[in-house]
Image 1 (tube, rainbow, N blue to C red):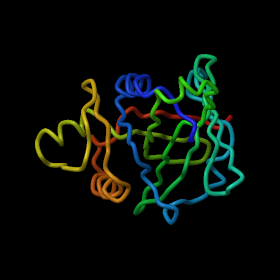
Image 2: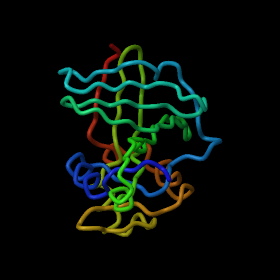
Image 3: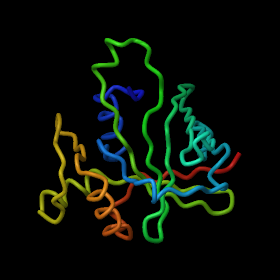
Image 4: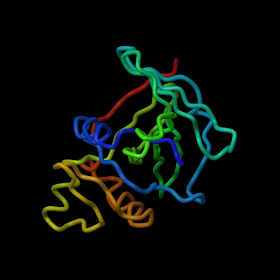
Length: 183
C-alpha cells in the first residue's frame, strides 16, 4: 500500500494555499524528464521553508524533503514536460506505521508549474478559486467532486493533461507563487 497522508488535513492545507488535489497523477511515464538543475537544496526568501530534491534510485522520480517551521515531510515528486512548460507532480511519501490509522487516509497529487533559472525556482500551483469559477461557468467539465466545500479532481491523467495544456498560459489558472533560491 502506498504511503499516505490525512486526506482532510491535505484538503484544509490546500484550500488555504489555494491549490487543487487530484486523485490521479498528471503524468504518464513518457512525460517524465530529468533536470540536474532541480536537484539540491532550495530555500524561500525568509528561510522558513527548505526544499531538497534528490534523484530517486528509479531515475524517473525525485525525493522531495520539505521542511517548514521545523516540520519535515517526504514526497515522491515527478518532473514532467507538457508542451513548452515543466511541471511538478508531488505525492506524499511519509511512512505511517499505524495500520488502523492508515486505512482512514487517502493520498492526493498536487500539481504545479515550475521554472528554474540560474539559482532561482518559481513554483505556482493550479488555482482552486479559478478552477471552481470555470466549473461554475461550464467552461471546464472534467470530473471532480466537492467534498466539504473543497474541490478535488477525480479526472484521469489524460483529462488532467488536456486541462493543463489548454490553460498553461492563462495567468489566473496558476496561483500561490513560491520563489525558492538555491542554497
